[in-house]
Amino acid sequence: MRIVVDDLTGPEIAEFLEGHVREMRAITPPDSKHALDIEALRQPGVTFWSVLDAQVIVGCGALARLDDGHAELKSMRTASARKRSGVASLLLSHIIGEAARMGFTRVSLETGSAPFFAPARKLYEKFGFDYCEPFGNYRIDPHSVFMTRTLGA
Image 1 (spheres, rainbow, N blue to C red):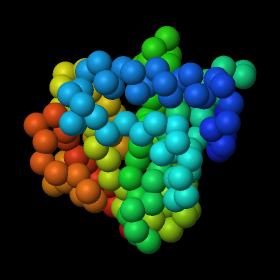
Image 2 (image 1 turned 90 degrees about the horizontal axis):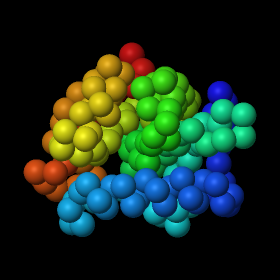
Image 3 (image 1 turned 120 degrees about the horizontal axis):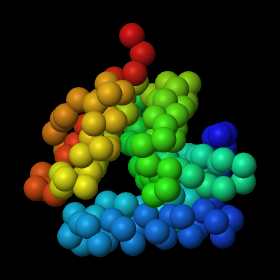
Image 4 (image 1 turned 180 degrees about the vertical axis):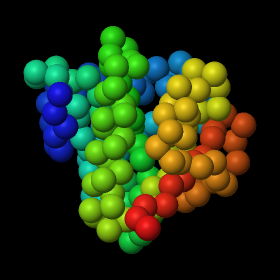
């Protein structure tokens, strides 16, 4: 597997992300859905990575700049057929390293509170993320869980 910065112009990643947004809409009430569409992921301040196995996309994730020291993890997704195979751990480790290299001292995220999201929360806990209050433009929401991790020493 290899992780590449993706410019989001290929049809494969567009289809992969459409599946992500569709799944989040099916699980989460509309007012609580925070998954970004492809246009939002193309904005300045967002770096997007795809995980490829051969030439097949098996995962993706993004880092969105909130301010000089704080970034948000966005659009973490693993292909259904590859869940629990190490794709998400590989990618999350990569993104955390890249965030530190970019000079961020903190990475935060929003994920769902429903049982569907329990494996994601467990993964983030494993990587040192702690539960926190809403950050950025988020507000308290019973369908959302907020987590953060300090980078560096």
